[in-house]
Image 1: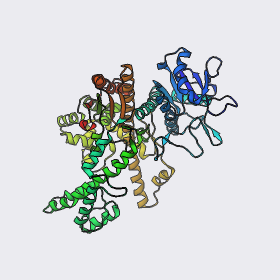
Image 2: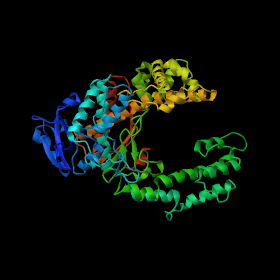
Image 3: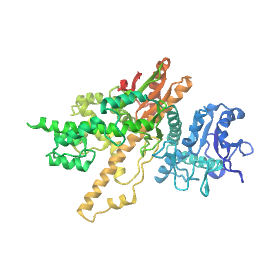
Image 4: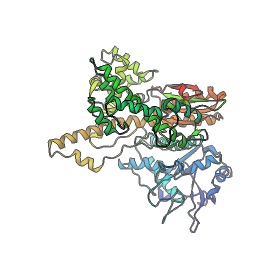
Length: 589
């Protein structure tokens, strides 16, 4: 059963009055024929906005249905669900129409028959405060009056739902696209629940780690003592008294004046210069070492220092706001103190509560396994059925007499193929990889060809790559000069690199969505209080009572296999995990 929640569409209804409409589940009527209610077609409940939690609790019982079978449908779960969680209300399933609309708009640009019936911007937080939302000019909070235009009412949302269902039914792979929309909506619930639970964070431990690495907390606007000393040491080593090492242009000039032949202050370029052979290598290393140390500590200070601690670690928890599908490939983004990573320098501050444990699960080699499953390449799938895919690729390469005869080469070759490397070892190993895995390489090269031609590509479930800008099309068609033709070739190659990675990385993001959804469902069915509290690409962190640890480890591991089967059926590819159950996040790394 689908229950649509939104402002009451009855004429003359004052702002703040809502209603609930019931629709058949997974039906696909035309938008014009969508029935906005049950029985007589009217709302099954009318209520004030602040009564929403009470209505959600009571309505399934009034309708005589199990709450677990209700798919609550809203314009934007990120606007609605946090308040329900705060009131102690949990949804098993939902349909987030704004996230679905974003996916279908992308597919419509590539030819899917879909026309939105109402504009539903996706919720995004402001940089200043994770509790606020960025909206288009004139747009207020969802379900509230926004300037002269009211937010879409429940009947409008019911029509949009029908339009989305009809578009999915007419797509080339409706079962896949339906799974993608369901997984994306499930992701909205997971994201809100992780924000609500928060990642355990010990401010006292964080303070001690900063003092150990940077020195005592400095006055506002001053560098920490150790950073200041290192900065002076760098300036002295380069013969530039008064140098501000925080200024890349000033630092680059000082480096070049001192004979350091680099074109930027990036770590890899500085390291490469210092690592050159010859009698002066030790002197070069001595010159660069304090600068690299300064840069590392500067990042710690600015990204996760005292200001970060004061801003983001509140009441013993770090609560970033996740942006579901915030990256074009479908990967998540996040707002809140660099939330897509916790650097090693402060990981020990992530501590389980007394009597609790952190379960840290890290999926291994996800993208090459995704490539094997998508391409149905039998040999690569056989490698993907082993715990260490790269090692098995090396074994296969050795048996076939190719240059892919050790694990490091196998890894370089596969990553290079997926990311479109055209130089160095990756390019040299590509023919050997093509010989071993023709179907996998053919899939990647077809995706690259589509990108170079300006055509869209799709993930396994149906997320569509963005259409090229008009300016790009003009520039790749320009043959007026040799320079223009060279630029066009470069632009096409760049687009091809993007699309060959899009299909793999985007599908890996879909696997991760399904993995988290399966974990969430497994925890709930088992009646456990352990909760997901952190996620980054192919790693999850859960927090719960120590006595639940064994069951949690089984659920997390089984969920990885279940996610693979959801996407690929019986494809013979495993998704192995490294699972650590620890008191401190640092112990898992």
